Image (cartoon, rainbow, N blue to C red):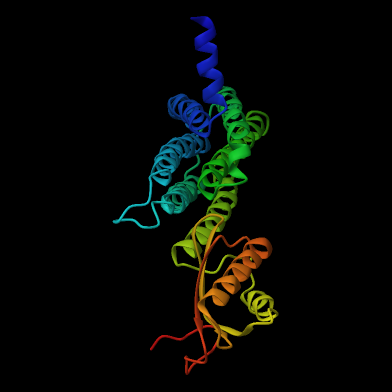
Length: 304
């Protein structure tokens, strides 16, 4: 029994879902401890850290649901599948975090004008508990964050929470020795500025994908030059390129060619697809071959 239990635990640590579950559990435990501690110590910074931890837990739940949806097979109702669920999750997580900190900015400004007495020792101990939990969660999600915008949004939550906990500990020390109670709301503002900046970057990337923007790492003009170097190609035009999900690039275009047999055009199509995959990592290509059919042969077609 002990061997089976260890095997299951090991399996959970080696899967994205398992790491998300462990991190989520840690965050909800830390949230409860910090809210209680924040009330007893009268620390806004500690309560802001608790709310941030709570939003981390929610973001991880959203990330996990998005992973399950992404795995669903394509269907007649969703011919691309539900790959964009992860992008939508990243959008939601980043938006929520920005919203939380707008509220905390307001509370911090009020505290500047109405400073409160704070119990620094308990504040630092509770912040230390939060720091340990956040560091564990950050380590667990680091690997997955490098390949997924969805997981990266949760990872940024945890990373910023670790920074927040360190700041709260330093703030508690300053309050204890220097009696600078204004440091508590000041920390809330400084931490918030960093977190909003990081969240905005993720939000911007998610919106770009949802608005079917061109993958940032791909230059459309480079695609044109590459394809038009092929001897049989006169030009490529009416080009559309977009991301269904992260690293899932799709391209469709019209290609002007000299008059040729269907079998010859099939060989040409294979050559173009292979070139686009090797050089630009575009795996889904749809090409329409033409022999000077389009009146408007601009690279990007402007629909009326």
